[in-house]
Every structure is written in structure tokens, then in C-alpha cells.
Image (cartoon, rainbow, N blue to C red):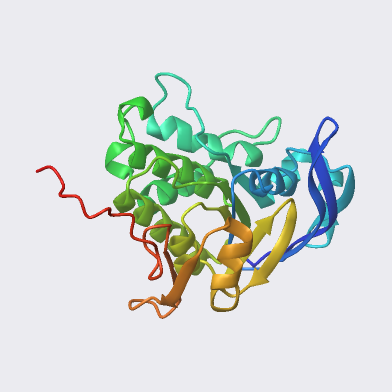
Length: 278
């Protein structure tokens, strides 16, 4: 599977009369992992919806391998680009195998039946996400981390060149967050899939991404390698937070330490001197 390029040019988009994205330009490196970060309501999820063709921009275009995605046939687009929304809901009573198998729908023509290739794609997706032993279980019986792996497995079975994920680690504890991001890294490195994901956890974004995209007020504030983008100035201007950025002792990438009002060296002590109750 060859790497694929995604390019956004002059995007203006929103909902009704409310503009969310204002002249957004973004190049997604082919075969790499891009993480989009920013404060709440800055336009991260809206950008992902435009990139996935769920939202039509008022101005601008999105090109996938040089082709405008809004002009591509739906089935062809689904064979090249997959989208995993935030907190997807599985049909009640559906099994892991049934849900993952739905990832093959874009490859099913009007008269095409389930094939050996479909069988292999689903089996590979289950194995890659460590779900083979849970294939017959109902999705609603699984833990949050397991359910998220099921959705990723469905996307894997789709065998797209580009995978967009809106906050894939939301509501997961740190162990399952790392598990999901490790899985996406494996997908990127072993299959060459271009990954684009919105993340809230800035340090995890910096650790796992090849490209970090910081958004503010509906625009791309900066985009590039985490070592260039994650700075104290960026954190201050994008998130309104004072911080210290140091080197991650494990990866060598930047790591942000929030100061907070009580974490600053020059914070004022409000203790009146009165003894505290035990």
C-alpha cells in the first residue's frame, strides 16, 4: 500500500452562519502521523470533518492524491480514506466480528459477494488489534479500551491509505490511551498508513506524532515536527497556559509541564501565618 498525500487549501467552513475555520491551509505528510492540538472550540474537529468530506467547506478544497475529495465517487473515497468519529456507537447486540466486517463494505460492489480477500482483511485486522479471541463477543460487553480497538480494527479492515481519527483516546485511562496510540503507530509503520488524529493530551501528541499541528481561533497557528512546534510560547498563545517545556527523558521529544497558578516559582504565598486545623 503506497503512501498517500492530503492537502487542504484555503478552507473556510462552519455551521450555518457561524464560521469556524478561516482560511486554513495544511499539508499532511504522506505515510506519517499528524496530531492536531489546540484549545476547545478552536476548530480541530471541524477541520477533521472537512478533511473526511462530512462537512462541505464554504470556500477552499481538500485534495487526496491530487484529486478534490468532494468530486470523488463515495465508494472510491471510502476505499482510500477512513474516518473514525469521536465516541462512535455500535448497533446493539452486534458482535466484534460483525462490526469489523463492516469495514469491507466499500469494497463490496452491487453484485460482489464476500470474498477470500475480505476474510483475510478482517482476520488481519482482528489479529493486529489483538481481538481475535474476542471476535464472537458482543461489542457492548467490552471495556472502553477494547471497544476502541474494535473500531480501529474496522478501519483497518477498510484498508484505506489515510485514516482520520477524532480524539481516539477520549474517556480512556492512560494505559488504554498508550495502547491505542501504540496500535496506531504500528499501523503507520507497518502499513505506511497516513494517520491524522485530534488529541487533547499535548504530551502524548508530541510523543507519537511526526507532525504537530497547533490550531487557534479557527486557523493553523503552526505545523511541523514536535521539536519545533511544542514551545512555551506556543502553549501560552494557543492554550493560555504558562508552562515549561523540557526534553522527554524516554523519547527525547519535547514534554510540556504546566505551571498553573500555584506551580510557579514566583507564586504569592497567601498564608496568613495562622495555624492550620489538623
